[in-house]
Image (cartoon, rainbow, N blue to C red; front, side, top):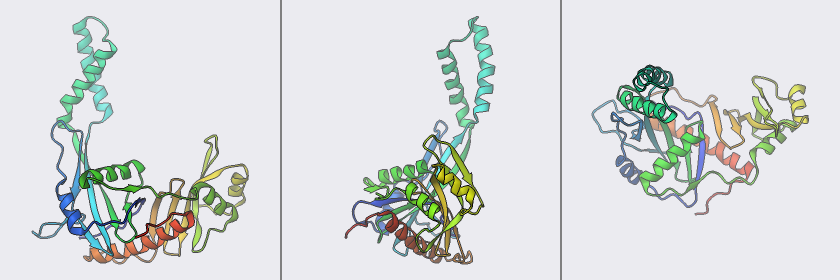
Length: 298
């Protein structure tokens, strides 16, 4: 077994202290296990063990370390390429119009397309994707490993369905990230222990934008964009010489890279998970303090 460190974070905060246990969460997730699509399903979702077992032992749906509960959602999608559908529609449309003796009407074309999709769906190739997440029992966070807000909300909604309720919300920030990061970039002085990276994306209210990658963010060119009224949409940062990442205007943390802290990938997934959650707890806590996210009182 190997553990893959999270590369992207969408964070949700519980509105009351978490009372879940490993056993209780495992039992609930086991009631909604993953299964493959049947012939007429576009997609399915379900829970799978975060790690595969190398022996006959039944794998658990939840792993716990460092007061954090790790779990994984798998989604299977049927892939039916649009170009393939268009080709079949075009071929069948010729036959249909020959039978009708006239051009097909719009609703007839739509009905033809729907029938072709229905007929071809059983032959569509399945594609699996997995999204891991963990609940921090001490910090009262749900942390989801995905760059996509839509995918994060999909995990939240499926977890809520599995548990019956899930009182979580995005972090309620007292300070908006965009103006704060713009100030950091303009002053070149983000709060210690954060330092500027080499990437940023700047936008104007008219949606004009410029992307800077692998550049000196203190350069006159970057400062000129700020003087022209552009604000930061995302900014790359380094935290305590331990993690680099980008922070965006929606408070999503992306493109995480762990510096000198990832142990050699071995069999001790608990140790790897413990190391990662320890680092992320410190990073998220400091970001919450900077942007004014209140913690839940026990």
